[in-house]
Length: 391
Ligand SMILES: Cc1ncc(COP(=O)(O)O)c(C=O)c1O
Image (cartoon, rainbow, N blue to C red):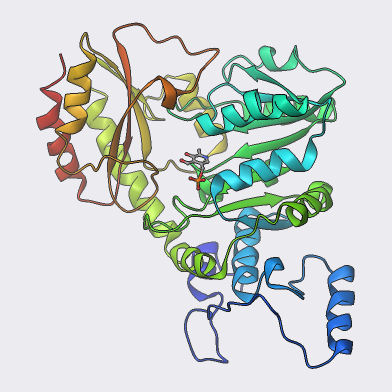
């Protein structure tokens, strides 16, 4: 009998040795051995089996991080999964692993704004050129490929505007031109969409969000296929970008309920989306309305949708939009998302990123809502009472 992933998440990583349901937190800088021979044996094993969890120093990990890596590799259906101290650390590791001075990368226009700043400003200083493509017009990607292009970096859906792309087409363009691919899959997580299975070389998730699920941990994961494993491993070693055992423990604990929470985020978000879809002054940035390109692209690749959505609001006064956000009683105002609670943010220009392909009219404003695990009828009532402030 082979159990489903939901069952696996509940039963994996029990510790019968310590008789605890969850594995212990093993903290170590020095990993202690009985003899020099034992050290050498472990080093030989690590050489022969670099994914096997044979460590001789705490920076490489301990059993606590190794357990989380194994769970995530199963979820991602990946060859291996690296862990970093933040989600952004995984974005950096993916790009740094496969690019060198003189290379070019092609990046989706609506990426998370720190990812944009990393590629357009920081990499430029190292003579790595970035070109941004329009997520809904892949000709802007294909046409810009040169012999120097090393990587296509996708984020799906795009941050703040939630643009869904034709991911299969991106993979086929990349394969035809022998270019590596990476995707930031934090929104859907591999619970709803598995990038490595589709053909991406690298798949990033900010574990800060749905994996941990309780807004009190930071971490990132970078799942890879066999083709890029050694390159990423070498970069990981040289940067020292590794997650500590305490955070790994909390993320492993959060993962136990990933499916339950995401299913509920999806149900709640769908109810809120249904309510919001009635308003003429609000364009819902969420896969809800069946007649849109975004919906079709979401449906093609995803088995579900998470709790993060955008609203493109038409209002003469920006102040009234901020008032709408401020007057929400059940939505906290703060960064990040993916925890159990609802959040609301007005997106200013900096947060939107300096986009090449997004043209907002003067009377258009972006708001981001994270739909949490509260009773959805309370959330809808709260939004309803605050909408009256829009002018
Ligand atoms: C889509 C996306 N990717 C990556 C990150 C970065 O993750 P972290 O905050 O864990 O560094 C974020 C954070 O908000 C994000 O929204």
